Image (cartoon, rainbow, N blue to C red; front, side, top):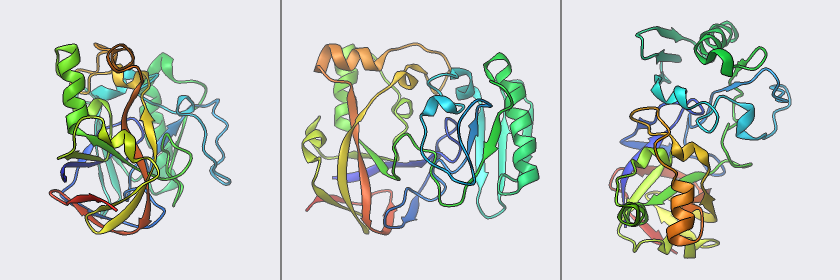
Length: 250
């Protein structure tokens, strides 16, 4: 088995950033993955004492499909986040600085319009991951399983609907569901598969058009009698993951 695609998603709900390689630490997600998020004004999130809360408290594809039309890029060296709207409006600012986060919050709030609740706050909390899981994980998708879903529905389903970190080849379709609890060597890392990935309505949004034009959750249930695509893994031993890295069950 080998890695065919590698991504991180610096801002919760926004653009995937393709990677050639990345170093990941034990117990952590990929660096800068879900490092930033816009919390809705009514969200019970305290940056001084951060704890995991549900995705609906944040700007997210599940509730705000129009954010799929935003194109974003984070430059870690410069500490600059650039976001461009379909109408050409753009912001480049510093999400690691308090005043930069305030300006970014204003920009996103204006873009969300009626979907913004109260006074949203743009957050970065060092070491905290705004993921969909309670603990930092790396998400993996077996490309054969995705291909089997496409075969069943008779249409393509872009891989970025599912927003995984690692897309891999070389395993039979759905075999990864048998790996929960097992350890895996991935490049220079060692992982433990902790759970199957239960899909949500965020997958309805086409990442190319920002339209809700399919229902993968219903498709999975209809054809495979579950709503799962992919697995989540915790990093036991850190190291480097790269395009072409091998995956091997221990």
